[in-house]
Image 1 (cartoon, rainbow, N blue to C red):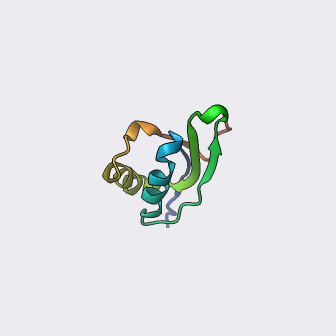
Image 2: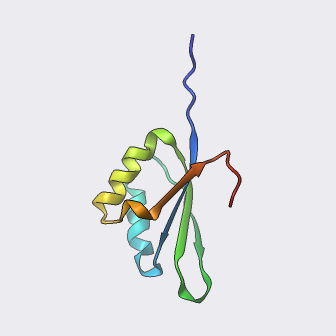
Length: 85
C-alpha cells in the first residue's frame, strides 16, 4: 500500500498597489480556496500577496494568473517546509 505525499507550497506574488484588486479577483476565481496575506511596502512600493498552496493546484493557479493577464514571472514558490528568507 502506498500513500501519496502532497507537498504544500508557499506562494508569493508581488504587484503594484494599483493592480492589487485585479490580482485578488483573479485569485478568487481559483478552483480552490486561497487565504491571502497582504503586505504593503512603505512609500507606495510593491504589494506582496502570500498564501499556501497544495502542489496539485499549481497548474490551475498558473492558468488563473495567465487568464487574468498577470505574468507567470510574478509568482514565486518555495516549499512550505523551507525557512522564510
